[in-house]
Length: 199
Image 1: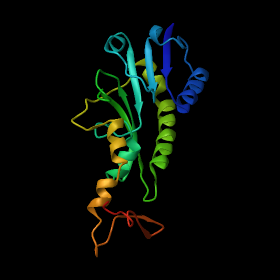
Image 2 (image 1 turned 180 degrees about the horizontal axis):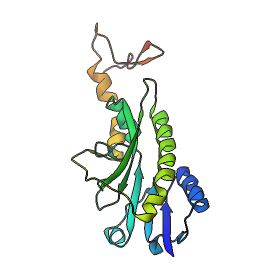
Image 3 (image 1 turned 180 degrees about the vertical axis):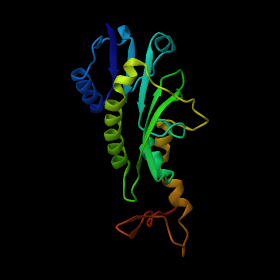
Image 4 (image 1 turned 60 degrees about the vertical axis):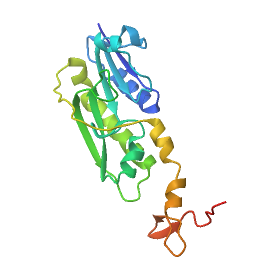
């Protein structure tokens, strides 16, 4: 019997596990014991997988971003910060790098003008679940093709934490007689940092 472990730290993982348990083909079974698995599937799992673990089984990951451009954390936020018109979910092999394994498939979706990072993330979760259902049997059977990743960018959680601090940005647009920094909501400019003063 081939043992399959689905690892996740999010609700989407539980949803995928439930679907898998009801659609497991003959000859395969789910296991809660990661170390005894023959096939490991990550669905937003938040731990780094060690090299010796990867070498002894087939390992796959569902990543909430388009690879190789959006490796790492905070993909929904970075896609908006970078002005992207679309985001996506990538299914790829797990290797020793951070989201650098060979790509199996990418499913994309549009980012609308008023979408927040939460909106993009929710869309990604829906796409991820559908991708899981569509690809699950292929992953078990190993009947999949993949392509190597090219060069890309890796985003770390600490980068997103730094991006939250808008102090320098506001300072850069604080100038008497000049328009200050703003955000647009409902076609209205909302100015930020208007009361910023040098003390």
